[in-house]
Length: 405
Image (cartoon, rainbow, N blue to C red; front, side, top):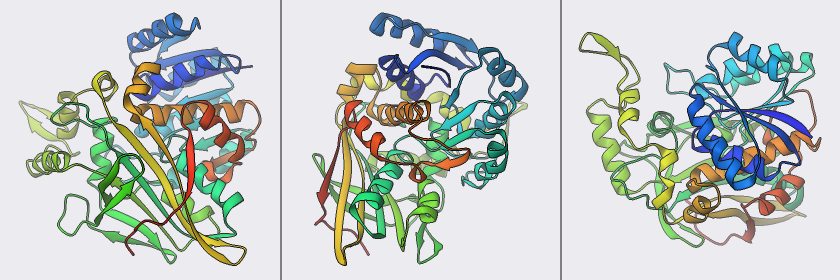
């Protein structure tokens, strides 16, 4: 049906490529490209053995807009799936505009020299994509991504108005390492060391970062895995959901962190290893966080011995037919099962599967439009069905648990 280019051959790129290969009747020609073509070839060889599907590979520096444009003009895909680094989003969007290709990503743009992310940089591309007759879909992983779809589903089918949303993300798994991150260490550490923000009554409120005294946290009783300490964190989907969910008065994002993780991160932060500004070392400049990334385990290689589960979902508080109700929509994913299927841990799996589904929605015409879209602006129904079919079944419950005010 369609030719696609996947940019990025890390843990998520591996999952996206393999899930696309499982749906080869839709993704009829798959290109996997990255700066390191050898990594692409490893994934392509695994896919050839597992699914008897042939992937094309190429080397490209996604920061080089002209080189990427040339490659896209040569391949002429219908869609680019960007699972590279968030720093590269704008360069890849520029290349898609120049080559006339639709675009989808999983995480919003983040400037390399500032630990701060927001959608304004990509929303600014609205007119350019519209004028070219192209579609760009932002944030189609799990959170953001599936959490946005859950919100769109709740708004369409469960509520007349939603007053409060709490997004809760638990990784209750064990990878066996003293300290490791479940996705790119540089991006992960920049994200969790930021000042926390949440949206309430029409404005953003700031609270201390998770490593600081006074950080907001509480114990949430997650399905299957039980009570886990959950910390208030800023996450990008809140920015778009605050804009698109009718009647919303408050939205928060909570994520679990173990004492072991927090202790290691506090030490690294205290000695300056989480800094993103250059320091002089042996006559050259290095960025401490990038050096730390080189020392930490590769997230793509964590899955072989990973046990336990992830539980990610949304609690909604709103009104339907004049009555107040609370609903909880969530998914449980098993690390070991993800490894058996696609040789990835569950954090990569829960990001890669919805990325493939979003691409499917675009290529089959379920999601149509020109311009730049966040996922909750698009119809959720087919996407929700595909989640269950493709390995991420979800459940909806009446919520009777505890959330802090």
